Image (tube, rainbow, N blue to C red; front, top):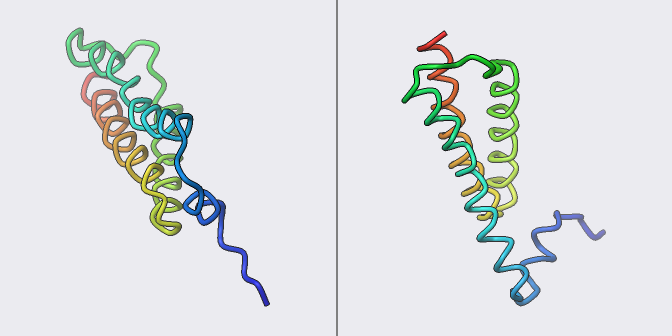
Length: 99
């Protein structure tokens, strides 16, 4: 009986085209969008308007995606979510520090 494995097996078999490479790069850069929030928190010591609930959900989501990526050996998902998890953790630390 054929066992279903996940989409990463299909993707791995295909040669990476320009769009695939672009998307891998985009996945690596996306977590950096958190940097302005970190700057706002730590330079201005301000967490007004920063939602603890929202950033906690983001953190939990990154953790779940990280586990998924590890389980399926999807390196782009792993790297993206390690970086996201760490940067979101900095935001959460700032929320607790300055609220």
